[in-house]
Image (cartoon, rainbow, N blue to C red):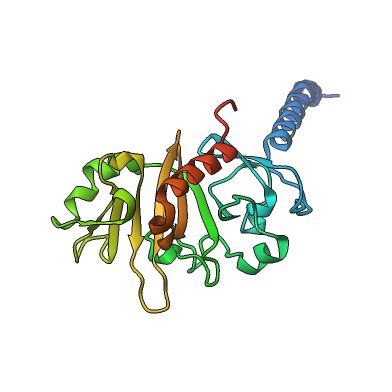
Length: 253
């Protein structure tokens, strides 16, 4: 064997001996990466959660809510864990989820044309659901908390003239040409932060609808209901909204 052949043979043996530990190291890294990906990969049950199952632990914007599956309007949202938003439906005044057949009949996919999150009109509940309370939970994000909007945003868009509503409420229209055109700001005369809502007006066969918002840590809870509930008993309504939020997000969580 020539010197060149001997050198080449020794070089191949040396390279081969170096590659073996390197290959083992690469295999170890790949196995560890696969394990981490498997553990962290988001997954939810392949089968739908039954409507009569116990409340699901769902987090929105890092805030934990205990949500009855039958109250969730969109089947794709009916799973535990983190979610971008959830859309719920409760009977009023019992604050219980609707019956399964009614829940299916009124279900509206999140983000559809009938269920956009911007504005009252696009959030109007389906026809025939005036005894229903609709709730959307989403991240507060860059939005100011509702009470901050009441103090610093809405005053720039309302008319100067207010009118008296039922049972100590005040009705203040938003000006034409503003983002809230066609709506009224309705609040308690002597304590606006105690209760306030933005409401559309009755228009033909379309009844007025109200939005009341509450901040729960980093989550924004929007509650939609028929405007005529305010004239009947706004105090009972405000207490019911607080009670529902307390059911969804007990403070001892």
